[in-house]
Length: 487
Image (cartoon, rainbow, N blue to C red; front, side, top):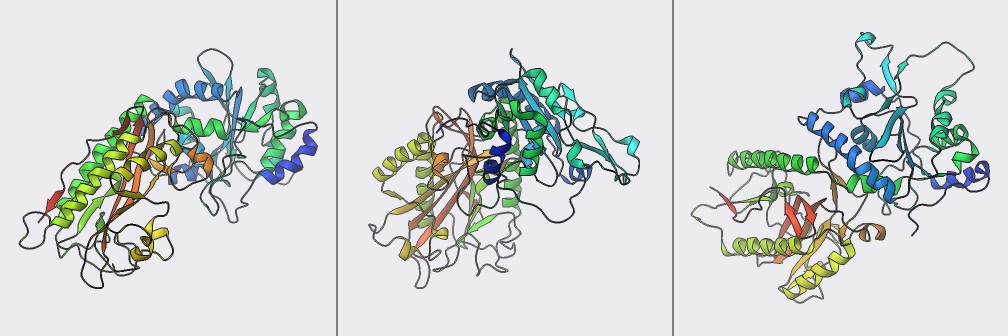
């Protein structure tokens, strides 16, 4: 696969017809809020200054690396509120504008904020009190004045006349040979995935190409490879903050465990995931019928999978977990140990899966593609395990990416390397960067005799954030080795 493909060749006006087919655009209905209102609606982060430092660090070290790796001289990222763009909002720091990064040689990438970026509006109580949030970031070299938002009286000019006005002169002065723009072409989501943005609209692309003129429009390519590398390349300040955030999450989990009153605390609303043996067709982790108004009780396993924390609720008369729970815990430690050793930076997800599949087979664990709750029929272990040797644990892995960067919080991402049996092939063939941030997500189903009418297996689910190094997994906090007991 070529790392970059030219979008326009020959006459750019003719080729725009082809580009129209490549850009999948959602034309949203309804009134969009102003940029300033959107900024207010984004939940603040207690790590605001740390996030701003991460943004500056990534601009200093990651930007030159990923642009040069992908042979990009200029990276243009276009944002408008009508097309929600969480990458731009959090990583770049705004919900509107034209953000231009230019490699002019040396160690530093020039950073400019141009175009139609919204500032105060006519409906603001005191427009003079508006403070430009982009200027406050301390991350950009050139910052255009934000536009005062007001509906003018009638005239011949429209928003399209202004959207990229003046950009041609800015680009020509730098004369980039390759210009990456935020649309996707190769790195598409899996079929039926509904949550991934495709980038700028076709209208924006046409207006941008017209403003640049044929010479520079011919040099436009997708920024998808630059973006995916930027997201998944970490800086030390980012890893440090992830560890602080995990320590805070562990403290919250400990408080949640301490607040449990067996027989009184409802499973739903407790802030915990509860594992409990159910019956065929029902979820053992609370995501089906049968869990309405159910209180946590003895025999349950309580989990905070995102932090890798687990507890067992003792039944009356118990001083330790029964044999089946001890066996389940030992199985978890074994699965986690093998993944911790085989998930390594520098390898692709496909290579990693080959390695851990071999190791699990040696340990009597069957690696499966589908998760039990995503197989048809759902949560039917007899059907799911049919044709396999009885007594073996079945495991399904989906260690997809996580991203933090300058974002207020760490969130899942499926745009990048993936380990396991889900996602498009391209995601399985990208080598993991050093300190690759991801979740150790897997489900396993351990055969375990139950009463008549009950499931004859026990479920385990892990969803712990971690980073992958060349030596294996590095946990953000020390991994739990003993099952917590709750009386």
